[in-house]
Image 1 (tube, rainbow, N blue to C red):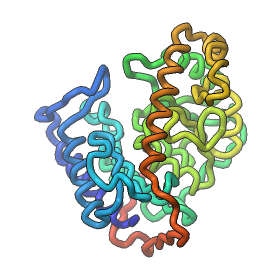
Image 2: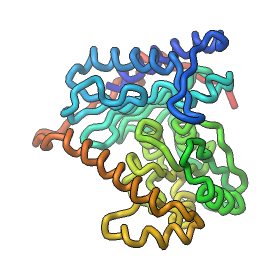
Image 3: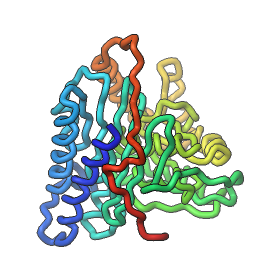
Length: 331
């Protein structure tokens, strides 16, 4: 399964690299303000899904551009795909973008590939077998003090995003660490945490395909990832924090007041939380978000059949030979 994901990621990377040679010919559309989509996104996604379904026709698909249009909606196995994470960077010629592919079994990510085609860097991980960049094992950083740490983030950019809330978070984190970076591709940001290049990362407004593959990279490299309250429910909550264990704990304590993970029992406390974070309009937004998140979770739960008794064993191929990984250039 990992080799098939690598094959699909490299196929998409070839499409992206060819298009990058002449961006002037690129047809760029928009899904909303500052939310771009190109013919390359769609072509790369089709190539990925074709390869995955050829090998596993009974698996499900959750992809950024086509949603669940293809694949088996009732499968326990779901491929979570972002064909081009960092589209805005790509259309401007800034070479910071990636292909992200994850395989989840019963909502638990088992295999992950993030491919950076501009550098020919292949990040990959299998649950319980570690995370790698090309042929090098990854480990999160050993830093323990937030004051010494480099933290990655992503800025809100869509219409309706809560800028005031983010600025308060950004101000608090920025004054507590050694530096904050925002390259613009969350899948790579999480891989940078796994590699120890970042000590931590946080962002709001993310979708499952933005974080699924990167989340496994982080945990397999010895790091932690969760929502702003430190819980493991982050794929569908649109907020994520990750990092080396000590840094993660400090970030969670700092970001917990800004969480939007509202449980039914806490729904009445939402207006008080919004007042505490300085956002006058967030009470209504919170209610709408909870409704949308609950609906999405219900669809996911409905699609998952009862668990089989026999355990699923996923065998990792030796050294991912079919991928023919090469060293990326040194940073």
